[in-house]
Length: 246
Figure (cartoon, rainbow, N blue to C red):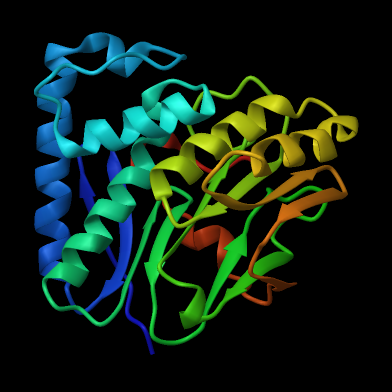
């Protein structure tokens, strides 16, 4: 039985299952400290909605966010949650952990030794929380990152219930999920948006949900029915952000 523990640092609120939990927490604090120091020196990096350049002394977290944003065509902060999730998981694994599963506000990076069911929550309307991925150990390490115009505090220019992107690179998956959500304003946009995101080098697969319609592209883990009635309660979010919308 996996044991998930929660930890918060500034704007990051994580659920972690790993025997390297202490190393993961230390990495979270370090990554947040380095990123925030960089944002003070480079405020455009925080606020830009399009790719921006890097200062020569940028830390690794900023470099990963920059590369992902440049490939997808969004601002670098669109990749922050996924990047932190991967950096934290990598620190736990480097410290000798056999397994590391890190969820950061709907963005997940996992390296697993047993199957993992990843629920896909699209709100209470339509398909809601009925879908999930069944991820096998052989498919990991893997990132499963999601964006929604219905939930969370991330800026979205679309009207997509759920945009989920799978990649081995969590920075890229996170940025691409934001871009995918921006592209969907009606069900007629679903397939074209899926194909556009799946065509980005490094993206394994895309799943988009709008109302009662689902569009898929690329290579995704097995799609199964989510039987966990506690899915909504488990979604990590800012404690000051209030309840999830229905």
